[in-house]
Image 1 (cartoon, rainbow, N blue to C red):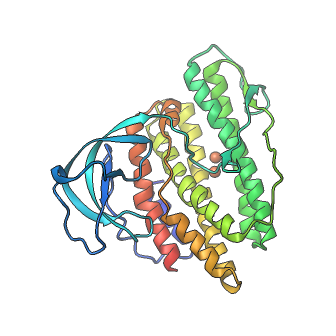
Image 2 (cartoon, rainbow, N blue to C red):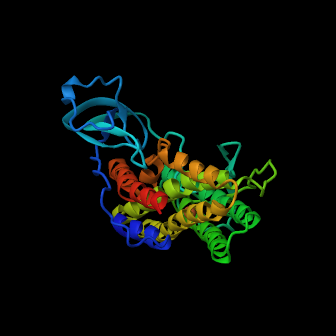
Length: 345
Ligand SMILES: [Fe+2]
Ligand SMILES: [Fe+2]
């Protein structure tokens, strides 16, 4: 699904299909975009050679990156999801300092802010295959790790379903969240099947090490803020990345798996936006209306968490730069305009 169609899916699922899809901001270059803060009413930018790189930052970074150089005309643009902050931005050459940095695409299951993942073990009942010869151990390991992440997403949706029930969510939302959890079982099986194929041994998840009680009575503001971070940003970007990787992958089984995952993740992304929209609406008659709305606004305005494209590039055997460009496009062309439409509604 092209990014403009994903945006339309999100907006129409929010009943906002008539919102003008303008003002999405520029699409960053593949190499990267570096910005400095600018005055709210700035109309021009300093020349690239006059910019102090110490004050510059990588805009919508997909990995931990260092600025090598910047070039071209600086342009004035919004640099937050909600367009509150202005900056001057330049095309840039970036150096990856820690490829494979610790960050998430999709919906993680967390305890005390740490992602919880099962260990990968030998077993054949999670998409297991008839193991053939070892083809590519690194690729097998990358698929196994993604299988563990998909497996954890099942728990994330189970938890979300309980939380929504505890706040009186409507049936369609609860049903969609359960359906998304079932999708994640399929994703995990597909990933473990590919791990088995490339690694020559059937693998699957061990026990998910859940150590803390799940509190279904968390404040709605916290649930909404998590849905922004993990869903509206994480799953939307995950959907765009999976689609880009599916389109570029050469291996037919990999293409098929990633295309199926992308189609589901696009729905999950739209679902997250619906959850946030419901939370904002549901709270409007309650005392905590302003708290929920502010939590959502703050979550959208927060810096976007880094997205690690390294493993997906290994899994699909595609260029990381292609995926980094897709992640940036997701943020500029889908997340930001959808966030503005949601908050303006
Ligand atoms: Fe998934
Ligand atoms: Fe998902």
